[in-house]
Length: 602
Image 1 (cartoon, rainbow, N blue to C red):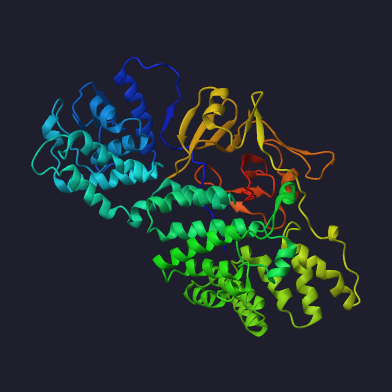
Image 2 (cartoon, rainbow, N blue to C red; image 1 turned 120 degrees about the vertical axis):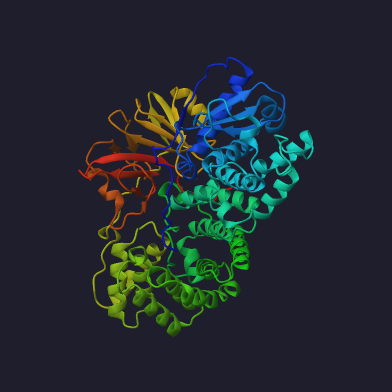
């Protein structure tokens, strides 16, 4: 599959709030502080950036009243919008659930964003400002839930607000207002009917988070994110497909050269899942049937939900082409033919045709495999298939009919692909024999271009304290001191903690997922050679020349687009967990340390 490119964790233009350890002055002040944090996350979502009316002030002010009645409403006296919740509602209904609080605030914020809350004279409001008609209440419910999901709050927990309301207040509206105000059960029933619609689940932060993890090859984290989406929205076929793809990549990550040879599996067209981190090679266990079964089950369910999707057909066909037994592999050609026919012209069609050639070659149908390989070459004739260069060359070698053409394709492949690839190792094993058959001298493996191998970076020393990938985000934040907190990117549940004086940002949810280094105060990143007892290393520092990292990038560096900010994407330094943003002057503009793909070990 073509590389996934996704917005991940780099936008710095979102609404922020400040961490504070100060004790609240009163219970309502504490509730307001808690509510402001949730409201800031909602306001950071794209859907909250353009209110329908022009208010005199923005963002809306949050007020918590000491009343024990169940109240929640929005007003705009003097054209200054505000959201008011009662302490009784927050304490008795919302409780400790951030998701329920996000739904309540999202509902009231949506009234403001949708223009339901009209500007009124100073002091005007009360019941007059609350009596929204049914249509507006339903619209605010839907938009409010979408905002909460986009900010990363769990659907089921947010929706539990209705159960809590009914348990505490019966079936009356929160404000107990006009007769045309819908009851709690009416609102819940209507929202449940639309709860699985594509427009809602697509906005979920977990889905975007999963796509981001696929982009950085963190397949275990991606699988966890898409599992969250499928549990909340079981009809979201895109999430099922991505879940299956994540497990398939975990399965592919484990395949060693003997496994590839035993399966008779040529190089498939996908996003580099077969590349191994040198420091983890000893932990690889070969064919992992459980991961393949997870992948196949999720992809089969995705196909049941969307049987004509070219993406799903292609991924399911790829799964069967990579199956651990030949009986399953025999199902691949039919699916891949259907996928290629349905895919748009260009790289997507070429990818399916390449994988069809691999599947047919595994079945021993060499003439049909050559035809599929030719179809892939034709689909790429106009260019734009740079991500398929390795698989195209591998197939050209495998399907060549004459020895000289075979050696030409094989030599080109060995010069273009990473030595860490299991397929590269298989190809090089065949290379000397083919050279001798043609009375040529084979080149040593070291003569083929090969990026230097370094160990993965697991931590960065910040202000004398090591911050490690995977450690608790709050503990790291407490050690570094007060930070500004913003949403990590559009429609993602991740947070970004900003420490400009230290030149560091921490990105994550419960744990640190990435460490971003920027500015003149940023600490350096030390790369150590992968080989045991090897001496020397490489120090990367923001602002220095990009030259030290060029050998790490190779001829066709992987690139992940990491969202907003200034200046495009990051080039991933293979096997290290480090990505570099190179500025227009040829210097390292930013560095990011992130988790490597999950190796699947239990």
